[in-house]
Image (cartoon, rainbow, N blue to C red; front, top):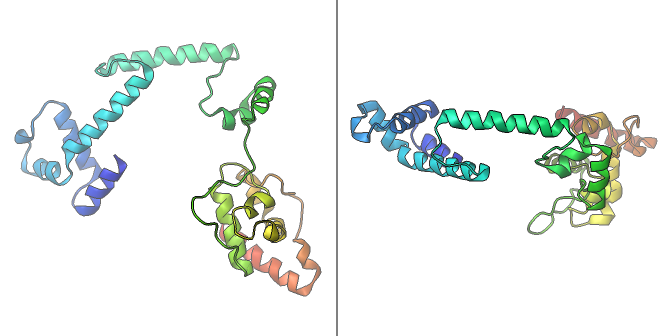
Length: 232
């Protein structure tokens, strides 16, 4: 659906999202294409509104099926059922019964001690392993700027905290570059990572990275500090 909308809007600069849905609403009211005015007809043709309508109808049917409801319910009945379902969920949660949508993500943050323990038993907690990427692993950059950017990219794409070993595993050199990844993680801006739930193993009180013991290390740390700042 989104791809369809982007495509027609990109191909016809006069089309707008509002215009598309105004014509779609006219069709839902039972008005046939032949009854549209000239401007609406242009939007109907250029925007392939019948295809957009079919996509929405499929989505509505899928949602109704997920709830176990008839697909042709009027809006008033849908609203009444949603209110009733919300009341049921509220009563369940008051008794401690929560229907988690993403238990592996939500329970570690908001679940009870019992739920967290049960999740750990089945191995459903968040993993510190790097996400598996299809295709060959990229090489870890050689210069400090690119190294920091590469680590930032991995952290930004991760759905859970990652340590240096997990990040290094995503590159060709793997274990050999783990110390370099650690150096990047220890440079200034650890609070930025912690704030976003990334890299929870970092010490928020650590200062410059260990390379600052030498003059060259100070230049490296300064460079990396500037890179972190660009992501602020």
